[in-house]
Every structure is written in C-alpha cells, then in structure tokens.
Length: 169
Image (tube, rainbow, N blue to C red; front, side, top):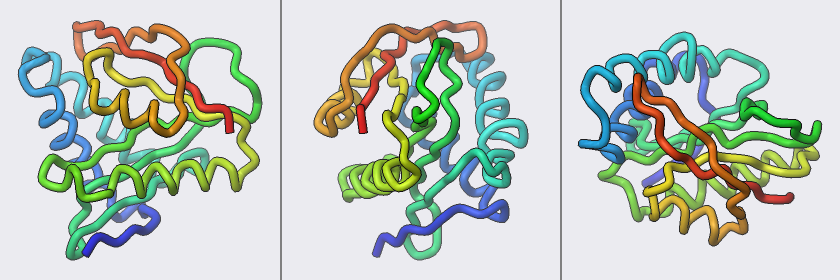
C-alpha cells in the first residue's frame, strides 16, 4: 500500500537514490555518462536535493511502498530567470520510479503540491519539463499547466530544451 509523508533530513540518501534512479530510467540513453556523472551528484547530492530536505525554503513529500521511498515531489522558491510574482512557487521535481508508474502516485503527489501551494497563498506554480517528455507534458497539461516558453536545462555539457509551464492557482 502506498503511503505519503513529509520527507525529513534522515531521508536524504534514500530520496537522492530514488531521484537518481527515476532520472536515469526516464532519460536513459539521452546523455553521455560523463554528463550524468557531473549532473546527478550536483542535483541530488548534499548541495542539491539532499541539502534541501533541511532547508526551510523547500518542502518535500515522499511516497512510500512498505516503507521504501518510491517517489517524491519538491516545492521551493522559483529559480528560473525572470521576474516572477512574489506569490510564485516552483515544483522542482515530481519523480516516481518506473516500477510504480501508473499506480496513482504522480497524481497524489501533484494534489499534495497544489494543496500545499494554495494553503501557503501562492498565486502560481511554475515547472520545467523536457521538451520530448510527452507523458509528463500531458500530465501537467491535464492539471491546467500551460506552456509559457523555452528554458535551457543543462546536464553536464549538454544543454536541452525544456518547456517552462505555469499554472495560475
């Protein structure tokens, strides 16, 4: 049975491992190993995701199956370049490991993210999604997110086109 709870700093290593697994599963074959070797520790290690678990500006909710983390969502300040309203929040990650895709975890984590943002009085939510991640783009569009432009996302030496999406809350 899937359960949901707030992440704690004690979850850092497991959440990082889940993020790495989900990222590699989703983008397998897209990046050179050297690019992944540079990106993954920076994004999901102590200076990134792991450190955010104890940072007050970020909130992370995990999904567990028999006490093992199988997905998570992370909310925090908007880091995209631009002039965003004070009430904007960013959905930095919503990841589910491949073995649990289709089990309703993504929708439940999105419900949590939207309820949390609205509960904080946020006025809009922003996120970026890889241009060819059609499954994710359809998921966000069904929730009302609209494409508002291009965002260049760097993975090691590779620069990918992401689509920046926004939902007015």
